Image (tube, rainbow, N blue to C red; front, side, top):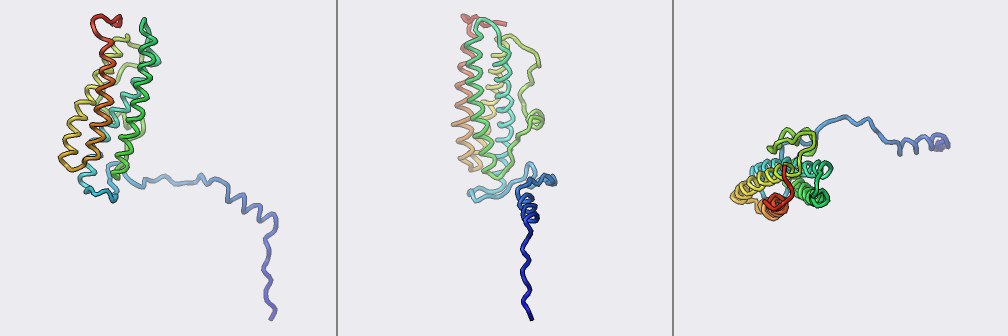
Length: 203
């Protein structure tokens, strides 16, 4: 009995298969692999309960930090007046500092097995910082609004740092103290120095 010969693919068939292998498959069905609020247990030495509590505190801080970050950019674009150059540059420097802070807080959430808030609508629903108007405000009001946002984050970061420390999560405590507190305390100092009596910045 003669052995059957293996049929070689035609050149056109090979070309079609090669094309299929590199063609993006955009027919991907939407589904969540992890729901918001759920914790994926990772080998980090912390209980799921502790991780869940820390993630909730960190996500609130994240929402407020993203709001403050974006407020800085709004004021960077809209500031006017005799101190335009100083404030324009300072707002952008502070914005960059908040950008770094957002990434630190979000990555802490993820490494605890949580889900970090990310989309603008979710941030708007979660933040406790008052929303500024769409229009332009005087520079002094911008400074006051930013200072109030910083103070809100500072107060809540201190409370959160104490809570996570008591629950046995020193890593999150370090994020709240070394990153969130120190960044915001420094930035709010720079802001409020523009509001002293001798400053030309008034509403």
